[in-house]
Image (cartoon, rainbow, N blue to C red; front, side, top):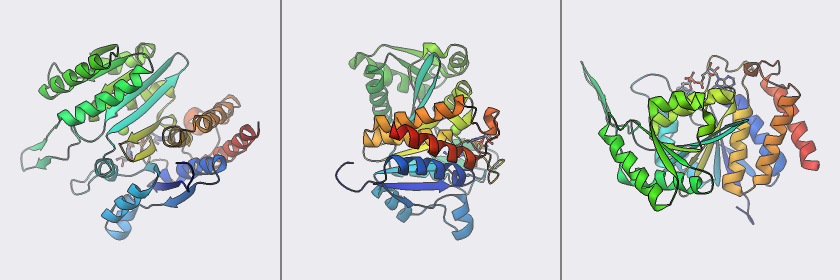
Length: 328
Ligand code: NAI
Ligand code: MG
């Protein structure tokens, strides 16, 4: 990304996306005044206004960026409305969803397969039944296993989360992960996903890199969010071979949207992940995290963390802190 203008697509999306993403974008702009940001509108709000939540043109615009900073989109529970983020992940082939969760004595990286499994989109509703196909392919499993093993090699170990005692598709997934781990000489173990959801809460220090299928990874990372202070705290990266999209783990939170209550930390950490993974700027990522830590230690917190700061007020403090760290 060096030597030419870096272009970042900024998608606020819906709900609290409009509140948390401006804070994250301002932090990036402060650290990298040279970045060119361009807004892209997708989501339920756009669908209500224009009848399209996302178009082929929007996907092309997103594909043309060096990276995407994404808020959250509302998906109404209607069978006619397809999830925008699921479509973007598929069309840009963002096959690895990286969800780090860390705390005092643990540092976990959940690597979730992001394009298939129960989110295959192959489904139908009939009068007396409904069916969703859980599609697990060799290609999809091998590339997510390779990605997880690459992280596990430079870290400690790999845990494969699955439900192979019941699902044939997970016997397939597990065996591919095991053979990849053997090939890469990564120390591995495997766990049933339901037991893993409990054990990660009781013994988070036992885990390092965890690889799992799409829906299981979605659930496991929300469970693990408990360890880190809630959904307002956790970032994620959706990574493909050519494009990458960074977004908070949380959704559009309609219950608090527009009330200046949302915690922007997950969005800020997503911006930090963007710097680290897309620009190789680990120092910039560290500065953002350092600023967050200083604010938390001064009790500058939003309401979900027991504080009294609004999103905007937290954002102002964040920029002030980041500016001072940047000068140190
Ligand atoms: P959600 O993550 O939006 O909210 C769950 C709960 O956590 C709510 O009580 C909310 O107020 C709280 N919360 C979430 N983020 C917060 C933050 N930054 N600060 C303070 N509190 C926060 O999940 P929910 O309610 O299941 O979904 C709401 C909408 O978001 C749905 O339409 C859903 O489809 C969509 N969604 C979108 C995602 C995406 O764009 N990647 C991911 C998850 C959900
Ligand atoms: Mg989720």
